[in-house]
Length: 481
Image 1 (tube, rainbow, N blue to C red):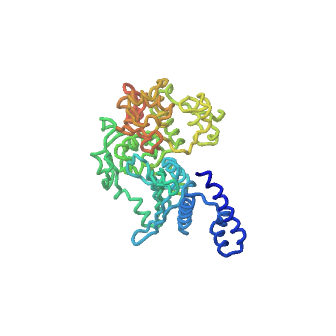
Image 2: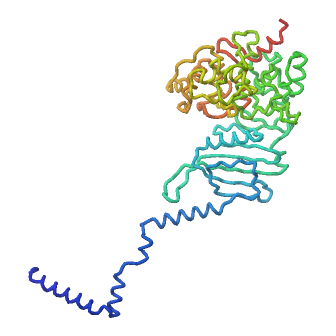
């Protein structure tokens, strides 16, 4: 049946085509042809399904970022993180004179925090003390009449193009420029607040009011190195009558800004001559000589100098345990610590004694010392523990450190520092980690160290069974023999 109808179908098609061809100029035929023709706009604008929505969303995002600009009076003194995009600016309003800017970056928060820590310290900013913040995400600093607060924290956002969640770092930069903000950010000793071990601030009219709450390094509170807390100037004067060789460093006027548990350590080391005040003196500002700045981050160079000074002061009567300062004829172990560096003798001496990683100890990658870089927790322990044990550090692995200390972030500790961390555990209550950081299950090896924390670590040298503290060294120094 189908074969019989095929000739009829072909004949019908032929007739239809002939009629259309013959009537090509007919309006009806032209309309039919135009309706079946392809859209000429597609020739120059090919369509990819779904691309228009993505392009529109991306354009909206770019336009939104383009409209957000920094204020014209944004202080040039505040460094800008290179890999951060400005998202929002909140100008000052009413009684609030601070300006807030919000940024987003794909870099981790610890990298951004380290950047600002180094930039502010290297450009004459004064880092203000902050409550104990385990995350280390808040930084407040002052320079002249400018007060800046920088905070970083991870933030999960939805990408407008891919619609997928992404983790970025939210960077908040708040700044205030006026005299009242400066005065408020730098309270006088009469109105200074100190941080209690619980992290709560309590008013401290002066250091004398905290006499009963400040723990002493040892039970012998009658020694000159750990007398009950007094006004820093009064205490320094009484010490001068007992020790004519006492350095000017003991007259710290900002000792009451240090955490209470660290004040005795700082005072003992200051009287011993380990912490000279003149190193903190600003050029042309004689009043700065009495400042210790206990909550300021310590640099690697400063800690190296303190480490050598503290060790040699503790063992002043035992030359065999002293660290020899390098001579000016020595070949520098680090390319960034030349002989002209004022602390070349101490840093080079530590390298030659094998107490810090360097090419001399077989570490070919440690060609730079980075003297101005902040000291980290793992570096503090790595440099200090060999002077406690006076022997080779034990072999250590990740599981051993987890089993002993119970650190949840043990995997973040540098393999070199793992050995020192394990050896420090064997010192029991005399360990540096317990004395400086207290009880903790998170070591935070890359977190920076404050000057008061460094002083606490250097207050005692030795093991749990045998050692010497700064307090005991003061007794030996003042003995008639």
